[in-house]
Length: 232
Length: 232
Image (cartoon, rainbow over all chains, first blue to last red; front, side, top):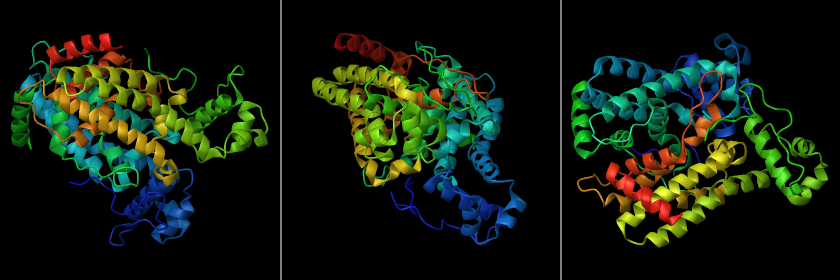
Protein backbone atom coordinates (compact mmCIF):
# COMPACT_ATOMS: atom_id res chain seq x y z
CA UNK A 1 0.00 0.00 0.00
CA UNK A 2 1.41 3.35 -1.01
CA UNK A 3 0.22 6.07 1.27
CA UNK A 4 0.28 9.01 -1.06
CA UNK A 5 -2.43 11.33 -2.24
CA UNK A 6 -2.66 10.66 -5.92
CA UNK A 7 -5.12 13.43 -6.63
CA UNK A 8 -3.33 16.40 -5.11
CA UNK A 9 -0.07 18.26 -5.36
CA UNK A 10 1.46 20.66 -2.85
CA UNK A 11 0.52 24.25 -3.47
CA UNK A 12 -2.09 23.39 -6.04
CA UNK A 13 -5.41 22.72 -4.40
CA UNK A 14 -7.86 21.29 -6.88
CA UNK A 15 -10.64 23.68 -7.73
CA UNK A 16 -13.13 20.84 -7.88
CA UNK A 17 -12.49 17.85 -5.64
CA UNK A 18 -13.42 14.35 -6.72
CA UNK A 19 -17.09 13.74 -6.75
CA UNK A 20 -18.77 10.48 -7.48
CA UNK A 21 -22.09 11.04 -9.22
CA UNK A 22 -23.18 7.48 -8.51
CA UNK A 23 -23.17 8.16 -4.74
CA UNK A 24 -26.24 9.46 -2.88
CA UNK A 25 -26.21 13.28 -2.52
CA UNK A 26 -25.32 13.12 1.18
CA UNK A 27 -22.20 11.07 0.40
CA UNK A 28 -21.24 13.36 -2.47
CA UNK A 29 -21.45 16.33 -0.12
CA UNK A 30 -19.23 14.62 2.47
CA UNK A 31 -16.64 13.65 -0.14
CA UNK A 32 -16.49 17.10 -1.73
CA UNK A 33 -16.34 18.81 1.68
CA UNK A 34 -13.49 16.53 2.83
CA UNK A 35 -11.46 17.50 -0.24
CA UNK A 36 -12.05 21.21 0.23
CA UNK A 37 -11.46 21.14 4.02
CA UNK A 38 -8.16 19.29 3.64
CA UNK A 39 -6.85 21.13 0.58
CA UNK A 40 -8.01 24.67 1.35
CA UNK A 41 -8.76 24.66 5.06
CA UNK A 42 -12.06 24.57 6.92
CA UNK A 43 -12.09 28.33 7.49
CA UNK A 44 -11.65 29.04 3.78
CA UNK A 45 -14.42 26.66 2.68
CA UNK A 46 -18.02 27.91 2.42
CA UNK A 47 -21.13 25.75 2.17
CA UNK A 48 -21.60 27.50 -1.16
CA UNK A 49 -18.22 26.16 -2.38
CA UNK A 50 -19.17 22.65 -1.23
CA UNK A 51 -22.53 22.83 -3.02
CA UNK A 52 -20.81 24.12 -6.17
CA UNK A 53 -18.29 21.25 -6.07
CA UNK A 54 -21.13 18.72 -5.90
CA UNK A 55 -23.16 20.58 -8.50
CA UNK A 56 -26.20 21.16 -6.29
CA UNK A 57 -27.83 24.30 -4.92
CA UNK A 58 -26.88 25.54 -1.47
CA UNK A 59 -30.48 25.01 -0.32
CA UNK A 60 -30.18 21.32 -1.22
CA UNK A 61 -27.05 21.04 0.90
CA UNK A 62 -28.98 22.43 3.87
CA UNK A 63 -31.57 19.74 3.37
CA UNK A 64 -28.88 17.19 4.28
CA UNK A 65 -26.73 19.09 6.79
CA UNK A 66 -27.29 21.93 9.27
CA UNK A 67 -24.06 23.56 8.05
CA UNK A 68 -20.32 23.24 7.65
CA UNK A 69 -19.69 22.12 11.24
CA UNK A 70 -22.27 19.41 10.88
CA UNK A 71 -20.45 18.06 7.81
CA UNK A 72 -17.07 18.27 9.55
CA UNK A 73 -18.47 16.50 12.62
CA UNK A 74 -19.71 13.61 10.48
CA UNK A 75 -16.38 13.32 8.62
CA UNK A 76 -14.45 13.25 11.90
CA UNK A 77 -16.86 10.75 13.42
CA UNK A 78 -16.52 8.41 10.44
CA UNK A 79 -12.72 8.54 10.66
CA UNK A 80 -12.76 7.04 14.15
CA UNK A 81 -16.10 5.24 14.76
CA UNK A 82 -15.35 1.96 12.91
CA UNK A 83 -12.07 1.59 14.83
CA UNK A 84 -13.70 2.45 18.15
CA UNK A 85 -16.44 -0.13 17.59
CA UNK A 86 -13.91 -2.77 16.54
CA UNK A 87 -11.81 -1.92 19.61
CA UNK A 88 -14.78 -2.51 21.96
CA UNK A 89 -15.48 -5.91 20.42
CA UNK A 90 -11.82 -6.96 20.44
CA UNK A 91 -11.35 -5.92 24.07
CA UNK A 92 -14.40 -7.90 25.13
CA UNK A 93 -13.21 -10.99 23.23
CA UNK A 94 -9.69 -10.76 24.63
CA UNK A 95 -10.85 -10.69 28.24
CA UNK A 96 -7.94 -10.85 30.67
CA UNK A 97 -5.66 -13.13 28.63
CA UNK A 98 -2.39 -11.30 27.73
CA UNK A 99 -1.79 -13.32 24.53
CA UNK A 100 -5.35 -12.63 23.36
CA UNK A 101 -4.85 -8.93 24.18
CA UNK A 102 -1.70 -8.89 22.03
CA UNK A 103 -3.56 -10.47 19.10
CA UNK A 104 -6.41 -8.00 19.60
CA UNK A 105 -3.99 -5.05 19.67
CA UNK A 106 -2.34 -6.29 16.48
CA UNK A 107 -5.71 -6.60 14.73
CA UNK A 108 -6.87 -3.20 15.94
CA UNK A 109 -3.65 -1.42 14.89
CA UNK A 110 -3.59 -3.02 11.42
CA UNK A 111 -7.29 -2.34 10.76
CA UNK A 112 -7.13 1.21 12.12
CA UNK A 113 -4.11 1.87 9.88
CA UNK A 114 -6.04 0.70 6.83
CA UNK A 115 -9.04 2.84 7.75
CA UNK A 116 -6.88 5.95 8.19
CA UNK A 117 -5.02 5.21 4.97
CA UNK A 118 -8.30 5.01 3.07
CA UNK A 119 -10.23 7.80 4.80
CA UNK A 120 -11.42 10.22 2.09
CA UNK A 121 -8.84 12.94 1.58
CA UNK A 122 -6.88 12.06 4.75
CA UNK A 123 -9.41 13.67 7.03
CA UNK A 124 -7.20 12.86 10.05
CA UNK A 125 -4.98 15.77 9.04
CA UNK A 126 -7.73 18.03 10.43
CA UNK A 127 -7.69 16.54 13.95
CA UNK A 128 -5.53 19.31 15.42
CA UNK A 129 -7.08 22.38 13.75
CA UNK A 130 -8.45 25.03 16.13
CA UNK A 131 -12.09 24.39 15.18
CA UNK A 132 -11.96 20.80 16.45
CA UNK A 133 -11.16 21.90 20.01
CA UNK A 134 -14.62 23.47 20.12
CA UNK A 135 -17.29 21.82 22.27
CA UNK A 136 -19.33 21.13 19.13
CA UNK A 137 -16.81 18.39 18.36
CA UNK A 138 -16.80 16.86 21.83
CA UNK A 139 -18.51 13.72 20.54
CA UNK A 140 -15.69 13.07 18.10
CA UNK A 141 -12.98 13.74 20.65
CA UNK A 142 -14.71 11.61 23.27
CA UNK A 143 -14.92 8.73 20.78
CA UNK A 144 -11.27 9.05 19.79
CA UNK A 145 -10.38 9.24 23.49
CA UNK A 146 -12.29 6.03 24.14
CA UNK A 147 -10.35 4.36 21.31
CA UNK A 148 -7.09 5.66 22.83
CA UNK A 149 -8.04 4.23 26.23
CA UNK A 150 -8.74 0.81 24.72
CA UNK A 151 -5.33 0.91 22.98
CA UNK A 152 -3.82 1.60 26.40
CA UNK A 153 -5.66 -1.21 28.19
CA UNK A 154 -4.92 -3.78 25.46
CA UNK A 155 -1.28 -2.65 25.41
CA UNK A 156 -1.03 -2.91 29.20
CA UNK A 157 -2.45 -6.43 29.20
CA UNK A 158 -0.26 -7.52 26.28
CA UNK A 159 2.77 -6.12 28.12
CA UNK A 160 2.27 -8.72 30.84
CA UNK A 161 3.70 -11.25 28.36
CA UNK A 162 7.13 -9.68 28.85
CA UNK A 163 8.94 -9.94 32.16
CA UNK A 164 10.88 -6.90 33.30
CA UNK A 165 9.24 -4.41 30.99
CA UNK A 166 8.62 -1.07 32.67
CA UNK A 167 4.99 -0.44 33.40
CA UNK A 168 3.67 2.71 31.75
CA UNK A 169 0.24 3.92 32.99
CA UNK A 170 -2.49 2.75 30.57
CA UNK A 171 -3.52 6.34 29.82
CA UNK A 172 -0.03 7.31 28.70
CA UNK A 173 0.46 4.03 26.84
CA UNK A 174 -2.82 4.57 24.97
CA UNK A 175 -1.69 8.01 23.81
CA UNK A 176 1.58 6.50 22.56
CA UNK A 177 -0.03 3.56 20.76
CA UNK A 178 -2.73 5.54 18.93
CA UNK A 179 0.01 8.00 17.96
CA UNK A 180 2.02 5.20 16.31
CA UNK A 181 -1.01 4.11 14.28
CA UNK A 182 -1.70 7.69 13.24
CA UNK A 183 1.72 7.78 11.52
CA UNK A 184 -0.21 7.26 8.27
CA UNK A 185 -1.69 10.76 8.59
CA UNK A 186 1.56 12.77 8.18
CA UNK A 187 2.84 10.23 5.67
CA UNK A 188 -0.22 10.79 3.50
CA UNK A 189 -0.06 14.53 4.11
CA UNK A 190 3.54 15.11 3.16
CA UNK A 191 4.70 12.09 1.19
CA UNK A 192 5.33 12.85 -2.44
CA UNK A 193 5.48 16.61 -1.95
CA UNK A 194 8.42 18.62 -3.18
CA UNK A 195 10.21 18.49 0.20
CA UNK A 196 9.65 14.84 0.94
CA UNK A 197 9.64 11.55 -0.96
CA UNK A 198 6.67 9.21 -0.62
CA UNK A 199 7.02 6.57 2.10
CA UNK A 200 5.34 3.22 1.70
CA UNK A 201 4.10 1.57 4.87
CA UNK A 202 2.14 -1.65 5.31
CA UNK A 203 -0.54 -2.08 8.01
CA UNK A 204 1.44 -5.08 9.31
CA UNK A 205 4.52 -2.89 9.80
CA UNK A 206 2.49 -0.37 11.79
CA UNK A 207 0.88 -3.15 13.84
CA UNK A 208 4.31 -4.61 14.67
CA UNK A 209 5.61 -1.17 15.66
CA UNK A 210 2.56 -0.69 17.91
CA UNK A 211 3.29 -3.96 19.71
CA UNK A 212 6.98 -3.04 20.08
CA UNK A 213 5.93 0.30 21.58
CA UNK A 214 3.83 -1.67 24.07
CA UNK A 215 7.02 -3.54 25.05
CA UNK A 216 6.59 -6.81 23.16
CA UNK A 217 9.54 -8.67 21.65
CA UNK A 218 9.85 -10.43 18.27
CA UNK A 219 8.53 -13.80 19.53
CA UNK A 220 5.42 -12.28 21.15
CA UNK A 221 4.78 -10.19 18.04
CA UNK A 222 4.94 -13.21 15.74
CA UNK A 223 2.48 -15.03 18.00
CA UNK A 224 0.17 -12.00 18.05
CA UNK A 225 0.24 -11.74 14.25
CA UNK A 226 -0.68 -15.43 14.01
CA UNK A 227 -3.46 -14.92 16.57
CA UNK A 228 -4.69 -11.89 14.66
CA UNK A 229 -5.06 -13.96 11.49
CA UNK A 230 -7.31 -16.37 13.38
CA UNK A 231 -9.37 -13.48 14.80
CA UNK A 232 -10.21 -11.95 11.60
CA UNK B 1 6.00 17.91 33.47
CA UNK B 2 2.33 18.38 32.75
CA UNK B 3 1.70 18.87 29.08
CA UNK B 4 -1.38 21.02 29.22
CA UNK B 5 -2.06 24.47 27.92
CA UNK B 6 -2.62 26.50 31.00
CA UNK B 7 -3.68 29.63 29.19
CA UNK B 8 -6.40 28.30 26.93
CA UNK B 9 -9.69 26.50 27.14
CA UNK B 10 -11.57 24.64 24.41
CA UNK B 11 -14.00 26.81 22.52
CA UNK B 12 -12.74 29.99 24.07
CA UNK B 13 -9.84 31.39 22.11
CA UNK B 14 -8.18 34.24 23.95
CA UNK B 15 -8.76 37.55 22.25
CA UNK B 16 -5.27 38.69 23.17
CA UNK B 17 -2.55 36.05 23.39
CA UNK B 18 0.27 36.28 25.88
CA UNK B 19 2.76 38.94 25.07
CA UNK B 20 5.93 39.64 26.94
CA UNK B 21 6.77 43.35 26.83
CA UNK B 22 10.34 42.68 27.96
CA UNK B 23 11.08 40.77 24.72
CA UNK B 24 12.41 42.46 21.54
CA UNK B 25 9.59 43.42 19.13
CA UNK B 26 10.47 40.60 16.72
CA UNK B 27 10.03 38.02 19.49
CA UNK B 28 6.79 39.63 20.67
CA UNK B 29 5.42 39.39 17.13
CA UNK B 30 6.35 35.69 16.89
CA UNK B 31 4.79 34.90 20.25
CA UNK B 32 1.55 36.77 19.55
CA UNK B 33 1.28 35.25 16.06
CA UNK B 34 1.81 31.73 17.43
CA UNK B 35 -1.07 32.22 19.85
CA UNK B 36 -3.42 33.55 17.20
CA UNK B 37 -2.45 30.93 14.58
CA UNK B 38 -3.00 28.05 16.99
CA UNK B 39 -6.15 29.37 18.70
CA UNK B 40 -7.96 30.93 15.73
CA UNK B 41 -6.29 29.39 12.68
CA UNK B 42 -3.76 30.82 10.23
CA UNK B 43 -6.44 31.69 7.66
CA UNK B 44 -8.43 33.68 10.20
CA UNK B 45 -5.45 35.68 11.49
CA UNK B 46 -4.49 38.95 9.79
CA UNK B 47 -1.19 40.79 10.17
CA UNK B 48 -3.38 43.58 11.56
CA UNK B 49 -4.62 41.28 14.34
CA UNK B 50 -1.04 40.25 15.14
CA UNK B 51 0.11 43.88 15.29
CA UNK B 52 -2.88 44.74 17.51
CA UNK B 53 -2.05 41.88 19.88
CA UNK B 54 1.51 43.15 20.26
CA UNK B 55 0.37 46.76 20.51
CA UNK B 56 2.35 48.01 17.49
CA UNK B 57 1.30 49.45 14.14
CA UNK B 58 0.97 47.16 11.14
CA UNK B 59 3.77 49.09 9.39
CA UNK B 60 6.11 48.22 12.28
CA UNK B 61 5.29 44.54 11.86
CA UNK B 62 6.27 44.75 8.18
CA UNK B 63 9.62 46.18 9.25
CA UNK B 64 10.36 42.81 10.90
CA UNK B 65 8.54 40.35 8.62
CA UNK B 66 7.52 40.25 4.96
CA UNK B 67 4.09 39.00 5.98
CA UNK B 68 2.08 36.28 7.72
CA UNK B 69 3.77 33.40 5.85
CA UNK B 70 7.17 34.71 6.82
CA UNK B 71 6.16 34.66 10.50
CA UNK B 72 4.69 31.16 10.18
CA UNK B 73 7.84 29.93 8.41
CA UNK B 74 10.02 31.17 11.26
CA UNK B 75 7.78 29.63 13.93
CA UNK B 76 7.82 26.27 12.12
CA UNK B 77 11.58 26.46 11.62
CA UNK B 78 12.18 27.15 15.31
CA UNK B 79 10.03 24.18 16.32
CA UNK B 80 12.34 21.76 14.53
CA UNK B 81 15.77 23.38 13.98
CA UNK B 82 17.25 22.86 17.48
CA UNK B 83 16.32 19.15 17.34
CA UNK B 84 17.68 18.77 13.80
CA UNK B 85 20.99 20.37 14.79
CA UNK B 86 21.24 18.22 17.92
CA UNK B 87 20.43 15.15 15.80
CA UNK B 88 23.31 15.87 13.39
CA UNK B 89 25.79 16.23 16.25
CA UNK B 90 24.55 13.11 18.03
CA UNK B 91 24.69 11.02 14.88
CA UNK B 92 28.25 12.09 14.20
CA UNK B 93 29.32 11.32 17.78
CA UNK B 94 27.63 7.91 17.75
CA UNK B 95 29.41 6.76 14.59
CA UNK B 96 28.72 3.14 13.80
CA UNK B 97 28.51 1.84 17.39
CA UNK B 98 25.01 0.43 18.11
CA UNK B 99 25.16 1.16 21.87
CA UNK B 100 26.23 4.75 21.19
CA UNK B 101 23.41 5.07 18.63
CA UNK B 102 20.91 3.89 21.28
CA UNK B 103 22.18 6.48 23.76
CA UNK B 104 22.05 9.15 21.05
CA UNK B 105 18.48 8.19 20.12
CA UNK B 106 17.45 8.35 23.77
CA UNK B 107 19.00 11.81 24.16
CA UNK B 108 17.44 13.06 20.93
CA UNK B 109 13.95 11.77 21.78
CA UNK B 110 14.01 13.18 25.32
CA UNK B 111 15.32 16.59 24.21
CA UNK B 112 12.97 16.81 21.22
CA UNK B 113 10.04 15.99 23.54
CA UNK B 114 11.01 18.83 25.86
CA UNK B 115 11.35 21.25 22.95
CA UNK B 116 7.93 20.31 21.57
CA UNK B 117 6.41 20.50 25.03
CA UNK B 118 7.75 24.02 25.49
CA UNK B 119 7.27 25.39 21.97
CA UNK B 120 5.20 28.57 22.24
CA UNK B 121 1.51 27.76 21.94
CA UNK B 122 2.13 24.20 20.68
CA UNK B 123 3.09 25.33 17.21
CA UNK B 124 3.46 21.68 16.14
CA UNK B 125 -0.32 21.48 15.97
CA UNK B 126 -0.05 23.48 12.73
CA UNK B 127 2.21 20.98 10.93
CA UNK B 128 -0.62 19.37 8.97
CA UNK B 129 -2.63 22.45 7.97
CA UNK B 130 -3.12 22.98 4.21
CA UNK B 131 -0.90 26.08 4.09
CA UNK B 132 2.18 24.14 5.21
CA UNK B 133 2.05 21.85 2.17
CA UNK B 134 2.83 24.90 0.05
CA UNK B 135 6.28 25.22 -1.52
CA UNK B 136 6.90 28.34 0.58
CA UNK B 137 7.35 26.00 3.55
CA UNK B 138 9.64 23.54 1.79
CA UNK B 139 12.57 24.57 4.00
CA UNK B 140 10.70 23.63 7.14
CA UNK B 141 9.52 20.33 5.73
CA UNK B 142 12.96 19.48 4.39
CA UNK B 143 14.44 20.15 7.84
CA UNK B 144 11.83 18.04 9.62
CA UNK B 145 12.40 15.33 7.00
CA UNK B 146 16.14 15.40 7.71
CA UNK B 147 15.39 15.01 11.43
CA UNK B 148 13.09 12.09 10.63
CA UNK B 149 15.82 10.43 8.56
CA UNK B 150 18.32 10.74 11.42
CA UNK B 151 15.77 9.18 13.79
CA UNK B 152 15.53 6.31 11.32
CA UNK B 153 19.29 5.81 10.96
CA UNK B 154 19.93 5.99 14.72
CA UNK B 155 17.02 3.60 15.32
CA UNK B 156 18.33 1.19 12.69
CA UNK B 157 21.82 1.15 14.22
CA UNK B 158 20.46 0.81 17.77
CA UNK B 159 18.30 -2.10 16.58
CA UNK B 160 21.45 -4.09 15.83
CA UNK B 161 21.78 -4.57 19.62
CA UNK B 162 18.84 -6.95 19.50
CA UNK B 163 19.10 -10.30 17.74
CA UNK B 164 16.08 -11.48 15.80
CA UNK B 165 14.32 -8.13 15.60
CA UNK B 166 12.68 -7.57 12.24
CA UNK B 167 14.48 -5.01 10.11
CA UNK B 168 12.27 -2.08 9.12
CA UNK B 169 13.68 0.19 6.37
CA UNK B 170 15.30 3.27 7.96
CA UNK B 171 12.89 5.61 6.15
CA UNK B 172 9.83 3.90 7.59
CA UNK B 173 11.44 3.56 11.02
CA UNK B 174 12.25 7.28 11.03
CA UNK B 175 8.61 8.15 10.34
CA UNK B 176 7.52 5.90 13.21
CA UNK B 177 10.08 7.24 15.71
CA UNK B 178 9.46 10.94 15.08
CA UNK B 179 5.75 10.18 15.31
CA UNK B 180 6.21 8.71 18.80
CA UNK B 181 8.06 11.82 19.96
CA UNK B 182 5.38 14.07 18.50
CA UNK B 183 2.84 12.46 20.86
CA UNK B 184 3.23 15.62 22.95
CA UNK B 185 1.50 17.66 20.24
CA UNK B 186 -1.98 16.05 20.47
CA UNK B 187 -1.58 15.70 24.24
CA UNK B 188 -1.02 19.45 24.55
CA UNK B 189 -3.77 20.14 22.02
CA UNK B 190 -6.53 18.12 23.61
CA UNK B 191 -5.52 17.40 27.17
CA UNK B 192 -7.65 19.22 29.69
CA UNK B 193 -10.44 19.96 27.24
CA UNK B 194 -14.01 19.06 28.00
CA UNK B 195 -13.80 15.75 26.10
CA UNK B 196 -10.45 14.62 27.44
CA UNK B 197 -8.57 14.69 30.73
CA UNK B 198 -5.01 16.02 30.83
CA UNK B 199 -2.31 13.38 30.40
CA UNK B 200 1.06 13.84 32.06
CA UNK B 201 4.05 12.46 30.20
CA UNK B 202 7.73 12.72 31.03
CA UNK B 203 10.46 13.09 28.37
CA UNK B 204 12.07 9.90 29.73
CA UNK B 205 8.83 7.97 29.14
CA UNK B 206 8.69 9.18 25.53
CA UNK B 207 12.39 8.37 25.03
CA UNK B 208 11.86 4.83 26.37
CA UNK B 209 8.85 4.35 24.10
CA UNK B 210 10.92 5.55 21.13
CA UNK B 211 13.60 2.95 21.86
CA UNK B 212 10.98 0.23 22.28
CA UNK B 213 9.50 1.20 18.91
CA UNK B 214 13.01 0.77 17.45
CA UNK B 215 12.96 -2.80 18.83
CA UNK B 216 15.07 -2.42 21.98
CA UNK B 217 14.32 -4.37 25.14
CA UNK B 218 14.38 -3.23 28.79
CA UNK B 219 18.11 -3.99 29.32
CA UNK B 220 19.23 -2.08 26.21
CA UNK B 221 16.95 0.83 27.15
CA UNK B 222 18.42 1.06 30.66
CA UNK B 223 21.91 1.10 29.18
CA UNK B 224 20.92 3.77 26.65
CA UNK B 225 19.42 5.94 29.40
CA UNK B 226 22.66 5.63 31.39
CA UNK B 227 24.67 6.46 28.25
CA UNK B 228 22.41 9.44 27.55
CA UNK B 229 23.13 10.85 31.01
CA UNK B 230 26.86 10.78 30.21
CA UNK B 231 26.27 12.42 26.81
CA UNK B 232 24.19 15.25 28.19
